[in-house]
Image 1: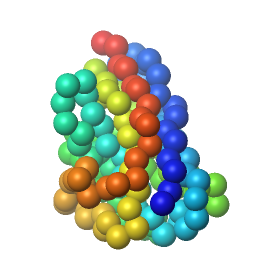
Image 2: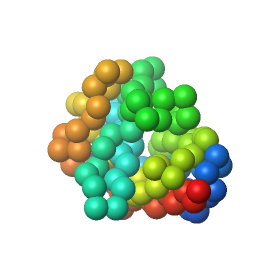
Image 3: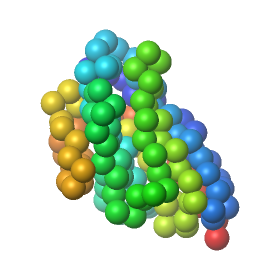
Length: 128
């Protein structure tokens, strides 16, 4: 099972940008689908973006389309989430999760219950 560590969160003004990283340790990273979830305080964890093992297909939630970009570098065992044009509603904890069998669909929001490997999260705070 992969061990995941998120980083890159912080405090930013509305309209600003951040790049989150999800670094993995363990074998076979290149075979895993990676998903980023967003969890505002007191609310459920929702999938915002997903990338397949090959990097060839991705998913974005409606609220982040055109603003967030997911990518991966299998040589570095890392997945990135570029957050642009940030809004106050993007505030919350961001978690990455991994699963070898999950298949990203461009019209299907990932369900947190499908994933067992999680990082500890990184906090993003967007001020208005």
